[in-house]
Image (cartoon, rainbow, N blue to C red; front, side, top):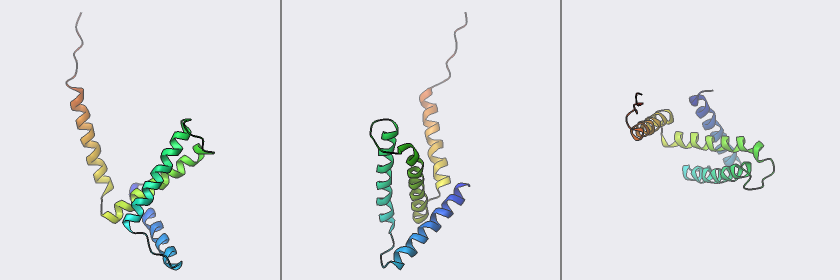
Length: 115
């Protein structure tokens, strides 16, 4: 799946959540609610990473890590859609900027002394 397909699937799942909430008499999640849910998922992810590294004890942490990363990705994809952000373009711009900055930090190529 490419990122467009991932995002379309994430958005459809978000719509299904909205329908489920309405059917249960609850409000749909706002963009702010999604952002707060994402913060919670990132916290869960951090705890799992710490457990995988041996700094916390969480049963099945390694097995749960992939699911939590996918939860975080789902949130990012849905938030980007709701906010009208082109993630592919933004990611390309961001990584190009970082790459340029790091290349400047490396300085000019060093010459090896001749003997």
